[in-house]
Amino acid sequence: MIQRIQTVFLLVVVGCLIAVQFFPYWTGVSESGVETQFFSYAKLIQENGAFTKIYGALSIVSGLSIVACIVAMIEIFVYKNRVLQMILGSVNTLFLVAAIGTMAYVGYSSSKELAGSFDAGIFILGVAMVCNTMARKFIQKDDQLVKSVDRLR
Image 1 (cartoon, one colour):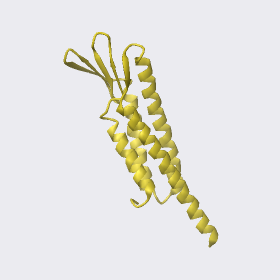
Image 2 (cartoon, rainbow, N blue to C red; image 1 turned 60 degrees about the vertical axis):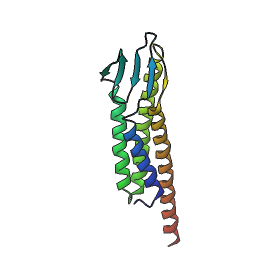
Image 3 (cartoon, one colour; image 1 turned 120 degrees about the vertical axis):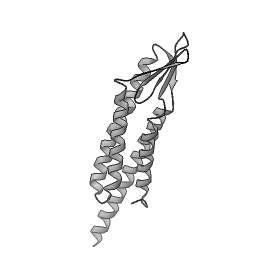
Image 4 (tube, helix red, strand yellow; image 1 turned 90 degrees about the vertical axis):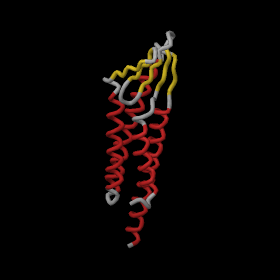
């Protein structure tokens, strides 16, 4: 149901979770001039014009964001069951917190070796988190409205 505001928020969550796959969440430069970028799926190292991708444990962030994206899409299509929507919203919040926490851990542990800062990727996940919370709040308001109308009958 696209006319409900929570659907718009959930579509923004899906868009943000897709976008986070393409933006780095941390960029650092070593003293020797080697630039390192952390994406949700890999670590990209640029040294003397050559790029090296290292996959591995960093893919956890990508997996969490993909699972959160799938949960948000499911949440959109179960609009007739608001209780299930609220549960899925809470589960989605847990996935988003885990992804943001993993990003923060990797960024802070890398800052010991490299001078760097957080990039757009972590902020995009923050926007997804806020939109997910707003969607859950509006789903809860819808549920309370339906319950209050049922009491009047």
